[in-house]
Length: 410
Ligand SMILES: Cc1cc2nc3c(=O)[nH]c(=O)nc-3n(C[C@H](O)[C@H](O)[C@H](O)COP(=O)(O)O)c2cc1C
Ligand SMILES: CCCCC(=O)C(=O)O
Image (cartoon, rainbow, N blue to C red):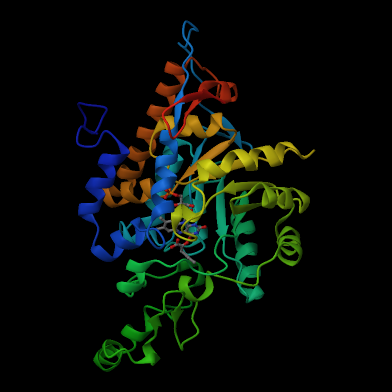
């Protein structure tokens, strides 16, 4: 964007943003951000699933006044879209999560913050301010005390909700992450678990001068290694590889525990639902909302694209007596994608990688651009489809293209 033109003429779509960002990231970061698990087929299908649907626009409806806003956590969000929690944003830009928070605040858009952010949750909420809702994504650790502390801090800082990630009982197989032996560079830290710089990725190299660097280069186990599922470190420090995945999580014990910790100040959401069965369990266990997600194709490759899983989840929730919001993420790259997800029954969508690409492009300015592109496209889509309010978007606005090319109404 320049003083003379409201658009960034170098970057008019999220696809262009993706390309520009790819050139600006180092290989480690680009691979970590962009890859999916295994062959990447679920990652690809999250995007291509949107191509199976077409919009059935209605005309002559006076669309001169369009309201794209929705209510979320008592806040008037400018568009039914939020920023999904993604770890380690300082890899993309030195301002990291602060830049994202500033852009969200400017745009009036809710922000999700990863447990493994490179900025502390207090600093991020400080930027968002009292009005703007924040959602803390939670990895519930086997070490419950650590999680209890984090939840208490989120409550104190004024987060509106925690979103418990449930699709990571184990870490998905990410081949480039393993090949690159990816971990957080020494100058960055997992800020929510910072204990004076004593964390993995820092210690081995920092304390360790040349001698421990040589040790590490030799692959000595004292310095740790990435075995494909976790970073195996003898130091026992908290890293996303060592503590993120938790195979012990279960509905009975953990959801009730979490509700006790969070309610009534913070809502409890579950992120990573992919079936109608689990949506019903979520209802039974009294969570406040669910996010249909496959972690951006980074966990179980071969899982359904989230847009394909969405209808069964929506049907399951509608079959229950309780009104529980259903959100979705994964592969959303156009305003029309937001429209399609809502038409299939989602109340709200979240975007992950496009924000990271915006950060890599221009920090806060780049995230602002990313949010603006999608917001502008969504508004235009509503107008061209003949809709002036978000709650009017329903399945009558969609048709599905079957594999053989036939079009069917939903
Ligand atoms: C680099 C990266 C890091 C992520 N980190 C987290 C995380 O810390 N916690 C989490 O629940 N999800 C995490 N996610 C998943 C996102 O929240 C979201 O589900 C996904 O990115 C949505 O798909 P999209 O990138 O296609 O928009 C991460 C995704 C990416 C790409
Ligand atoms: C346990 C994984 C933490 C970071 C993350 O969610 C991701 O890289 O996808």
